[in-house]
Length: 356
Image (cartoon, helix red, strand yellow):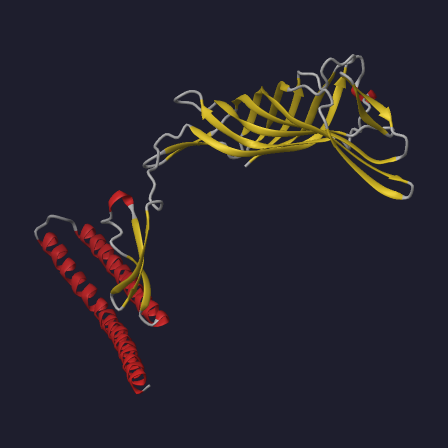
């Protein structure tokens, strides 16, 4: 037991000695920085005196005029005053950092000497690194001419169907209740080298097209025909939804702002008008119907996932227009909603699209 106590006491004394040494070291650094701070003004004033002497020599040798000499002296005085202000601020920040962290500071180590553009961050205690973190993601090569950009896209709005021989006013689907939602990812590539007026947009999107039948109706599949029928009790909700995976392609037109920098140039669409014309093609992922009603005093919710004779291949036309990332969006399926239908129906959507 006495041996354990002795070892523990020795370790404790070692720790306290290290702690005291660390306290002494960082306080010594602070005192050194304070002395440096006091000498900054003297150094800059001495440097200003030498500059003024050199200017006077040039004036005496008639290398410059009196007006030029006066201007150079004023510029030198302003420069030295600024040097004093900034150098003092740097030293004061170093002192504040050491005092606040009691000498334990995070620093960048050898940031300019690591291979592969890496940066290493480490914890430095009393001048010795405790741990290091390496990263090669902090520095990236900037591409001088970036022709392709990408955006997350989502759209939302009203959905319905155009039926052969009927107007939209005669649609059996609720105008306000039938909606669509679309989300996906698009790439936008500049077509020409020296102008951004035309862009080629392409991507992938999920479409969710919903129809809400009116007049207490729902969809019934009878063999190869799908038709609306009246439900035998009052429906609280009747919703039919088609989920599609499509690949949109558009040609986009519109002005853009040209910005040139030292190591790059860019075309910006900020606050610029955009017009896109194109279409899409893809596949139907699934079709489902949701019914809510009450029967014998009990609430019933039916979720029916079936084929409903919907088209497997999806293709259509689409267009959008607007400013920057907020656009009016319309799309129209060229394929019929139901295969081999006696009366063909085609999905149509109108809403807002957001390019983020």
